[in-house]
Image (cartoon, rainbow, N blue to C red):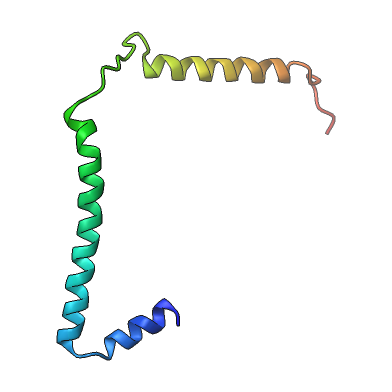
Length: 86
């Protein structure tokens, strides 16, 4: 029995049964979300004493990466002949 078969079978049930299944499904999913939220609540309320290095700038790092890649591509392409025979 696949999931689609189960859904089709549920669609044939009376409205009250479908509403009961809906309520149980929503409550179960909400319970899982609440458990995950509660598990992460401790980390949110008591942040770690981890410090971040403010000297690192994202665009500076990105610029360095791009600059290094361009220089690498130039050095690799410099070995190619200047004129291609076509």
